[in-house]
Image (tube, rainbow, N blue to C red; front, top):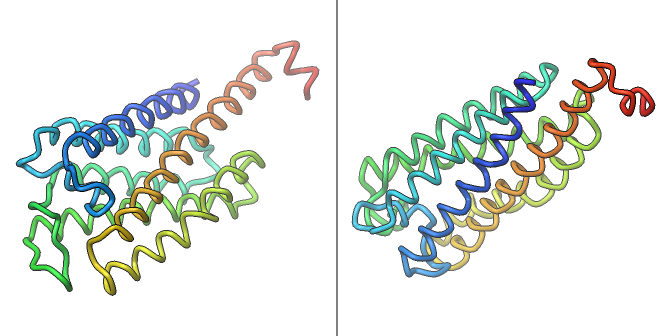
Amino acid sequence: MARVAAASVAAGCVLAGTAAVTFAVVAGTGAGLTGYVSEAGIASSGYAPTYRIGVFALAAALLLLAAALPPALPVAAGLLGAGAVFTALSGAVTCSAGCPLPPFEAATVADLVHAGASIVAMASTVFAMLVIALSPHAAPRLRRVSRLAVAVALPVAGAIAVGLVTVGRGSLLGGLERLLLAVGAAWGLGTAAVLGRRTRSAVNVTNGSPREKQRV
């Protein structure tokens, strides 16, 4: 029952966090696709608190997903836990205006910490997807959701890594970043739905639900 609750709350956190961050980005930065999502959280933004609340909600979602995973997936749970910690760090440490990054712009220590935390958080989440997608211990539906997400997330993440050192800030990186975050949010929501349904079914079987007995 604890995993059922964790999966259900995780879904709510994904929805709430995504909505808050999206609202802050659309209403606050005015940079369109040329800016980073993190620019909605800079000190001068009037929507910085909304952005940070959204980021912290997404960090909570990752932690809850880690708790909702079956015990047979400890590596994936650990990666999601690390993703949650670094997501929270990226929300706590904001970047300066424009979120400058080397090698094209001079960055402050806060800029580097924020960017590093964001990169590690996303990488941990993508690797968790990959572990689940390849694990024989994961349920078929859980593997299917992760495989679909990984099929999009890995090439997009690779393109972002190349873009950071070859192109820098612009519409290409802005669009790719938003696509990767959308894939992560969709994966989190889908995974929470699968975990909640599967765990509830297991509880019903344990309790002797006639319907579940027939399915078994």
